[in-house]
Length: 346
Image (cartoon, rainbow, N blue to C red; front, side, top):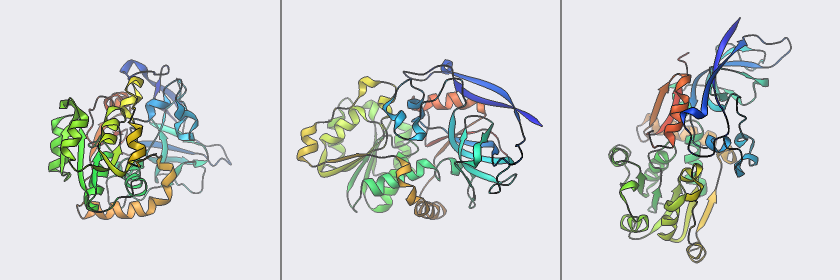
């Protein structure tokens, strides 16, 4: 038996902001069979995570390409891999049985042949929607958890600023910080998101950065006593403004620089005299460095979700053909919370 496997690829490397014409929906016949003695697995994609870092993989060159395997450059014409939830349809691997649910590295497509079952693990739904395992239980959630608690090393009562605060990582950082006992302000790109941060997620305050002409002055208003922790998802002038308003021994978790991904002219130039004399720590990090925290993270986040102390924000599109627009929307501020595409229900 074989299926017509539809998948998304890029036509050529992308150097600026992504657009629909950069992508192509391809199809190819895929035999649903495994050679005797093979430990390969064929999976059917259910939910796939849509993440902004992938734009760097689509460039002809990025310093990220050689950093870790997961950031390697994508070859035009080939299927794009991504984290998500899938169902086993054929398995030559004794660790995975037909119809079992798995989570791990799958693809922006309907099916994937996974060599040796590498990068997959069995999924236990734990009573939560399957989409959670492509979102809040996945890399976005662990990024927020490890970045805030390991990199920022918070102390109760500290003042925390989160940029991109309505995104998949930022909204969780803010919620973690509030639960921990910090004062939290977030920035977002429209008034609907600002209201959500304050009214649903419990941020102490929030602002629409697009309505502010002077970000340094803006942060001075929201943090008259200075910022202790800045969780940075955007880079650019927001990072410069945050550093200018930070307290002695402030900490910056450099999680992402989405403002620079598609426009290198927005590259940040924080005042290094501030960094030196205020003894500010600015640290970049990647979630694979903190996989040792995964068990603690899952236990903590599950409890918080069950007792209503944490809210999960999901923005779900349907169908493999919707992946390009879902991805492009990340750079236009279209999503609220974690962007996910449901490729199939089962």
